[in-house]
Image 1 (cartoon, helix red, strand yellow):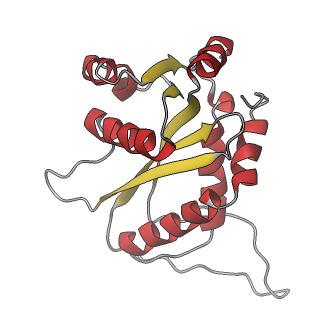
Image 2 (cartoon, one colour; image 1 turned 90 degrees about the vertical axis):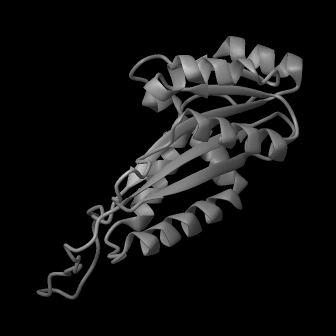
Length: 197
């Protein structure tokens, strides 16, 4: 991590942490309240299927406000439909982040197969403004984007969205709210124990 910080400082680059997550129609369980003697019940239909795949970047740079950049993909269970983010999808997210941030990027992510594949290495090599570093194996506590997913899923707990489209709308709304609270994105980094750049 120290090497990445030095290189980011030398290049005037953003340090971006990346991660992916998914969400289904099954709501997470959480505590709630109800009048004494009345157990709260959240009705969930068994109909329908689907999944939301999400990828996000938590971006930090000295002297700049922190940023959260994300993309979502809906999987409705149709034949031939992509079930998650592939190498070209990650590359498109990185290109969008580069355009939005307006500078070079030092990317830190885990050892997911899509991150370490030969195709991804070729895609990274074509982007001169991008440097990539891998997190140690089994170290989700060092990635601030894991806290983004935790925060998101806590806010979706006990909700019965009904359809995957509605769940996608709820998730997108909550992620957008996080984007406009830069102190929250800073808090996700502080929660890892890492110091800001």
